[in-house]
Image (tube, rainbow over all chains, first blue to last red; front, side):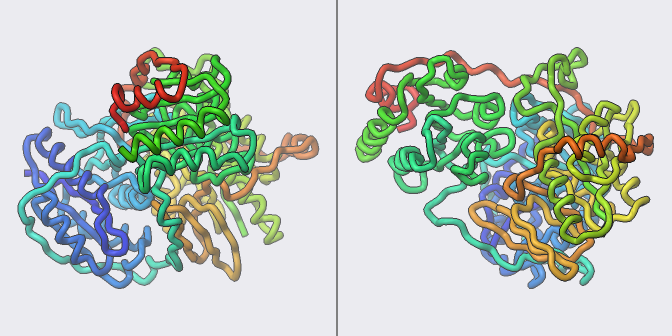
Length: 328
Length: 246
C-alpha cells in the first residue's frame, strides 16, 4: 500500500482549515489510486491542539515535528524538518495547501526531493498508473492538466476546493526536528496582525469591489458600507487594478491577474468596467452582480445580474436593502 | 555586490487566451508579449539596490526563445548591465527543470543577490524563486513588499493570510518581489540608446528533462447569459429567491 503524505499547516499552534481540506483530498486520491495510507505531517511549536485536530481529521497517521526553532514559519527550517520525515516515509504523493505557507514551502521541498510540483490545483488525477493534476493558468483564463514523470507526485491545493473530512482517532507520533544551525537564516522577527474585523479576500463569502467609476478614493466608503451591510465577517472589500495603481487602495485588495483570484458565493462589481485581467480574477464566483453606468461595459458579459446606473445612486439604496434583508 | 535578476516573457495580462492546435499550449496568434509584471519589480529593485550600494553589476537572465531579447533589452534600457538568454531548444519546460537550468547558469557567475518576480502570470506556479534558492543553497524570502538593506542583511515584509510577516535575513539570498514594493522606472531615450551597446549573450540550456508534462490545456466553460434588472428591489429579490444568497 502506498503512502500519501499531507503537509498540514498550523499557525501559532492552531491547525488551519486548509489542512483538513488537504486530508480530504488525500483520502479521495488514495481511493482513486486503489488504496493507500494517509499520513499528515505538521511542524511548529506547541502543537497539542493541532495534533488533536489532525487525529480526528480522517488521516491514518499523524506525525508532529515540534521545536522552538519552528515557533514561527521559516521556509528553510520547515523544509529541512519535513523533507527529512518525507524521505523516511517514501510517499507516492505529497499534498499541501496552496496558502501563503504552502506556496513558499512546497517548492523548496520539491527541489530538495528532486521532483515536480503542480501549484494551486483544483483537481487531482490517477490515470494509467501515473499521478497528475489540473490547475488554473493565466489567472483562470485556462486550465492546464499535467501528468507526472517523477516521484513522488506533489501538488498544492487551492483552498475551498475539497471538503474537510473527519475520522476516528489516528495514531499520533512525534518526530525529532532535524534542523542544522546553518538552515536558520531568514527569521521571522514580527507578525503584524491585520485589522481583526477584516476577513481575507480569498476566504470571504461575499466580495464587494470598487473601480474607477467611484471617481475618487473618498467615495470608496460606498463599497465599504455595502460590504458591512452583509454583517460582520461576511464580506470583504476588493478593488480593480486601475484604482490600486492610482493609489486609492492597497495592493492586497486588488482582484485580477496581478492581484488575487477570488471565487466567493457573491461578487459585486461597483463601477468596474471589466478589463480582461480583472475578469480573470473573479469570473469563477458563483453569482456576479455588476453596477455600471456604461451598458456596454464588458463586466455585464460575465454578470448574472446587472444594473445599468450610476453607482452613487444605486449603491446606497442597495446597502439599505441588504441591511434590511440580512436583519430578517 | 553582484546582482542577478531572473525574468520571463509572458502573454500580456490583457490577452484573450485561446488553445493552440496541439491542445497543450496557447494559440499565440494576435497575443502581445511582455515582461512578467512581477519581474518588473525585481528588475527595479535590483537596479535600485545597485545604485544604493554603488558597486557591482546587475545581470538579467531569462530562459526562453530568441524573442525574449526584446524583454531583455528593456531591462538593459532600465539600467541593467548585461543580459543572458538561455535557449531551451526543443525541451519541454516545467518549474522543476526551469529552476535547474537557470541554477546551473547562475552557479557559473558571481551572485550575492538574486531577484525574481513572485510568480509568472502565465503558469501561475510561484515555484521558481524557492526552488532556485534550494538548488543554489541560498537563503530565500518570497513575495516581499518592503525591503531594506543594512549591514550585510535585509529586513523584508510579506503578506500572509490576515497578517504581515517581518523577516530578517543575511545576504546572500534569493528575494521574490510582490506588487507594491516599488514603481518600476520606464526606460528613457538615453537608456534605450545605451542598451543597444550593452552585452546580450545567448547560450543553450543544459539538457535537463521536466518532472511533469502537459497533457491538456482547456478553457473554462462560458458563464450563462445574465439579466439586466431595473432597480435595487428586483436585484435584492433575485439574490434572495433565485440565487438564494441572502
